[in-house]
Image (tube, rainbow, N blue to C red; front, top):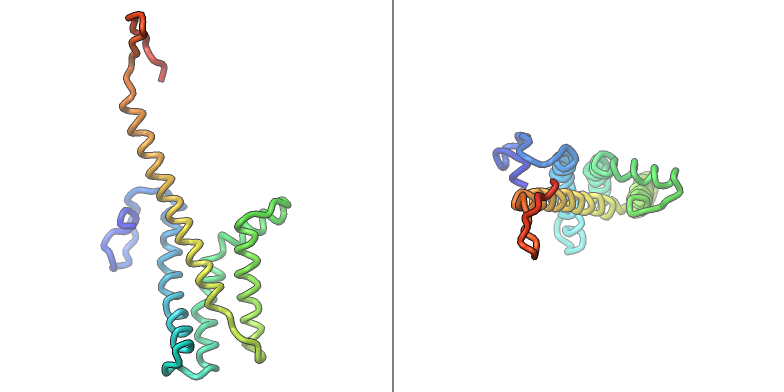
Length: 170
């Protein structure tokens, strides 16, 4: 992560390696983590029967925290999920978009009535999938770098069993 961020904790962006997709996913992940953590804290307060804001306030606070996570953080998943539906080739992004979209819509509808809110799972799923995307892009970048380093070690000539040297084509 330090390769993508300059000045840990300062919030300053500076590209120091990696590609645009990795940088953008890392930015989304940091924002989503910052918004999802309080959602989990609110859930834990309720589960452990600790003092928490009144239920009416909690539901609207969960809505305020989960909305940017699901709609902005999950926007790439919704776009890729919709593209897979249009192409009739369902994939992981179809499931993520359907699951998080349904949980978020159900919770928004619940704000108007007595339905329970399930904003936390939608936000957590988006955040965890973003984490997976960041790790995947980083692994891909590191693998590419390692393969390029190995190719640099390749000799220019090869000695055959009969003693002749042959120039290798690059």
